[in-house]
Length: 418
Image (cartoon, rainbow, N blue to C red; front, side):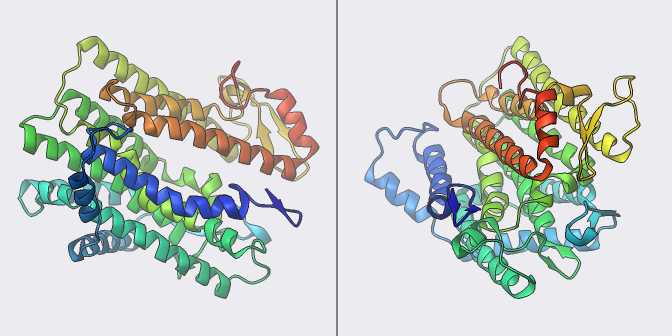
């Protein structure tokens, strides 16, 4: 949508307002379906007692506020005190480059180790934490909105020059500042990974523990879901600096969209499969286990190898790809657009890997409900939308060079189809 000649993303101001209102409602609805509707998306046989219980369960409690405060504080402490390499990000306006501390891998492993130790020693009662998930969800939703207000005000009083747009609603939704910081502590990078990705895995592992406590076993589908998701997040931290060249860090401002997505959407919706499997202790035939592992491995290899090709090309444009000198289109802006290897197949072939991995950790839930497939369906839509945003941004930035690139690399994501 355009207002006064300015392109407003995500449906403009009306779309932004709808997303601000409805995103939390979607998270609540998914939780309701999991806890009160046997994992089905369409309500069936819901009683007034269920609705009253649901409303009671999502009321924020002092324990939930304390839990989330300790969680955020601990992750921030790890970000500050854990040693790590300092890496420079991409060039921003004025040729400046921000420095980032890459200590996510150690922080991730320390968090998991401490969580498991507290579970095994009985300090944390997984059933009590599980019973309070609805309340915790409400606390995090309240935090994401409050913190988004802080980000908006912080941007207004610290960013010099014009506001990103003339709309306060749009600036609140998409963010006022590109890289808001408190001292050297980068808020966007922190929330992109620590409360979100680590929180996602902690919740999935919590649900696996609850399954064991309530059924006496951890099912093979649960093991596969947790294993695949763990490998995915572990890979992120093994290649942590790669995020510094992503759209989120380089182009997107930090506002409600990213804040809610990082704080609420990622941990509470990406862990849906593990929650769904808590009461479903089912086995899988060996052939299905092998196929699921192969599907995940294929997706992971595509995702990792594709991204590594581009990362290495940015570091050294003369490094060979598949034994050949890489081909690229030199733009007038000075950037080089890679057209070799996987990047000759499509403009975002890495997204194919993402979608395959998402399918791999949803398929163990089998087919009694569509709810476990919410993530791959949503994520596919997200990636297509992200590709469109990137297409428009690059078209404006590179002009005729981008047209040449698109003529050379015809397919957007999946060769021969899209």
